[in-house]
Length: 305
Image 1 (cartoon, helix red, strand yellow):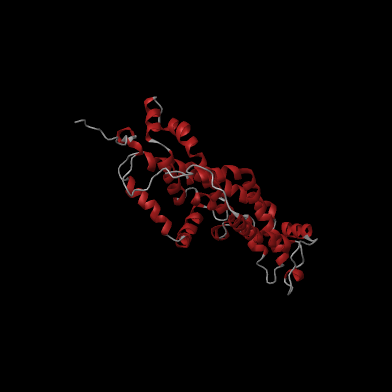
Image 2 (tube, rainbow, N blue to C red):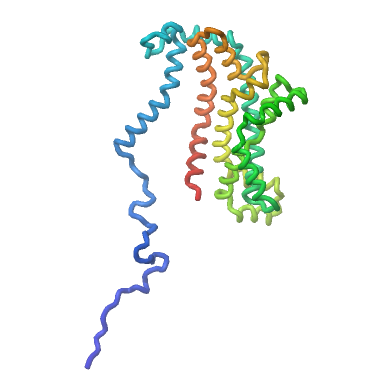
């Protein structure tokens, strides 16, 4: 009697890394890693969203280039007119926007630089350093986000007056040098983007904390810092509530000056819109200059984890 052997599937030759349990979805899907192609609906949706986002800016331009009677007419204009330069000049002179723009750049620049510096250091400490009470301190930082800023206006105003900073730019800059959102944002980013091994390797090479932050942390955190810097600059540039209370008419920021421009009994809406257009242009310039880095930072943060 001869014994015949049946051929078996070479199950043992299949790499164990590619085995999966029945019913478990595979991680290696067809087409994974390929760039997705948008269909016609995606392009139409993007076009609608883009046009809708530009409409307020376009209407500001249209209103700033007409007279108030034309803007407030039953059928408002839909195309730019010929009074843009006249209205821009009127807004510039009536509200003294030259000094206000300089003050806004000083305030927004100082707040942005300080926020990036302190929030990056604090984010690194909370993300990668081990010390007692770290969790409780981080919880306290996050808890401050739930406190309305209006609750601190009276004690903050009294404090600035006691120091002697009433009506000065310091009263707007120093209370906002650090933001709880910035600390949380940098902590979340560095927790994923900065490996412990990289920090430990720098310590083995003899680097102190200052050298680690300068040579390791800052290059890794640069994309998140660009995003945080843009958000902080825009918020500081557009801030109106606290600067309106802390500053006076002789030393305003841009938003406070625009508030004075529209504070008359019958303000000229076309001139107000011209002032709003002037206040928007610096933000557009900043975004055009740093837009590529900002979008790259957002995408870099989107793919972490």
